[in-house]
Image 1 (cartoon, rainbow, N blue to C red):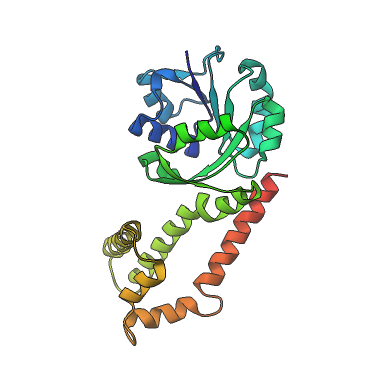
Image 2 (image 1 turned 60 degrees about the vertical axis):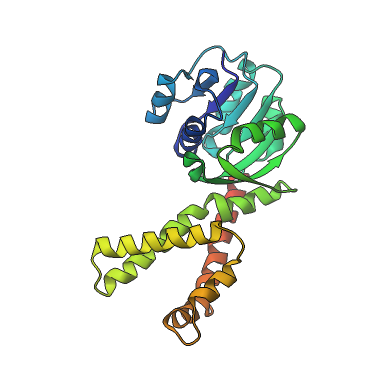
Length: 261
């Protein structure tokens, strides 16, 4: 009988599922998945013992809601009667308030905004929890696949969504832009992309090693009067990288609030 329920197996739900399978944070023999279509990730989990769209959810102790925000009420309306009256819900939906989910399902709720790198056990996840049972569910389900950062106010989950939940795409876009700049100046497509990707990977690994702030790492690369300093002057001028990133985060934050009504 399933103890953990994953509702939705799209991009983020599938990434969470992949992380659970890789780290064994959730036993597939104790997992149920509700999904309207047969995704490859769900099929792989089923081969390892997970139940797909089972009728009996009476043993579920923790439910992860990973459906599209616009669909959650429709899903919740058919779910409440099927879940036992105890346990907890963890929502990874952008913008949807915990109170609304708790009212719809009658259970304590935690909100988590993970990055898709949870698929390889290298995610980051902002966390806000309503009650003890929900907080415990978050630790069990997400600590093995992500670095958890707790926020003290639920409103900050939307900020975390804009900065981190969406942030991997900003990094990918920056790498793509670096590669495009190289191509414009004569590098082949493959050479430009390989150099941009490898540079980003190495830079992030240096940050992950710890001990030095981003500003300190920048200073190590940017010699006074050198090429890097000349480039940084362009990125730092008004309308440059800092202003563009602030505008991008604000746009994502506005959209998260729209999704939450």
